[in-house]
Image (tube, rainbow, N blue to C red; front, side, top):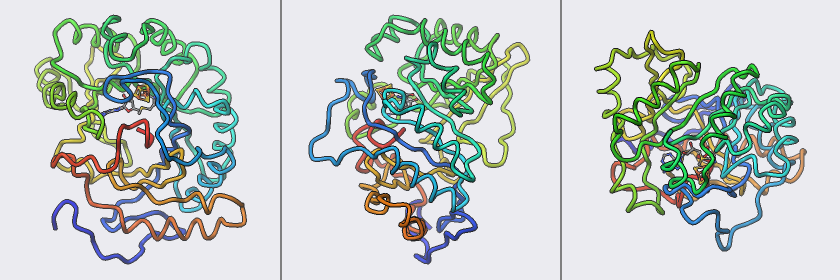
Amino acid sequence: MSRTESPSLQPTASLAGLEDGFARRFSYLRLSLTERCNFRCTYCLPNGFEKRRGLTEELSSAEMVRAVTAFARLGLWKVRLTGGEPTVHSDFIAITQAVAEVPGIRRVAMTTNGYRLAREAQAWRAAGIDAINVSIDTLEPERFARITGHDRLDQIVTGIDRALTLGFAAVKVNSVLMGDLDDAEWARIRAFVSGRPVAWRFIELMRTNDNVALHSRDARPAEMVRTRLVREGWVARPREPGAGPSTDYAHPDHAGTIGLIAPYSEGFCDSCNRLRLSSRGKLHLCLFGDGGIDLRPLLQDDAQGDELVATICKAMPMKRQGHRLHEGDSGATPHLASIGG
Ligand code: SAM
Ligand code: SF4
């Protein structure tokens, strides 16, 4: 069967769990709270957040909680709050608390640009956040400012150090791989993880509809980092069942790990365990698919719960076996902020 061929279209999801036509089970929802963001990352929102024309309003907090409740009824137990920048949502704390209280949800994680981390990590922890991913594409302050539009690297690193004192189950760094990794940057990253129990993960730059030129110029394969890791004595950790897409490498001289997330690598989609709900209420079965399945009409009243669950179940067999990024097909995704990266 080709990478993208559909299997039989019999619904396979049931109240016992979410499963697609390729026997992948889904335990994890990425919930985009908002498409808005205060940063201007060159590969994502280079001109800053601009309202896209003709779109519906973003979901209300009550609609989001109804959606999470339906997924939890189907056995999904982990939610990541993302965006855009989730922390610019004025109800971020209230949404976190409500999601953490949904029966069946055992872990609430978030992905953030770290802008508010130093100041608010404690409040987020108290609200129910268990794990944090922070985005840092470079540890060179000027390059950081050029990529994000904000000269705030020190503040974000301070936030990470603060988070490390607060008992989160995990503090990770997402770092998009752009251009060649020079020796000075590599030395800074090694120093960063040598004393901190942080998982630094390089992510291959993914092509979206808005970053085609940047992607063709700056994308580099994760293999480039793997070669370096192996040469310097880092050892791949065995992947735990149900783990995310990262392969993490450890070294006896370092408290933290360095990992690779390689969406362009063969077999990357085989272990996919996540679904996405955009801030407009669309269920996305893949980061790079079509326009998504509109769940909003079924998020208006608690009494619609059974119909919502049935609609999600019916959607599962439509999930394709893999994305088509290799073919230069980014689906309908203008940038990852639009869908909850
Ligand atoms: N604003 C938050 C942040 O930056 O962490 C959360 C949303 S952001 C879309 C989530 C993650 O996607 C970030 O780590 C970001 O670096 C990553 N990302 C965005 N666009 C990407 C792309 N084209 N390829 C790979 N990673 C990307
Ligand atoms: Fe904002 Fe995150 Fe996109 Fe950067 S990657 S522009 S911080 S949504």
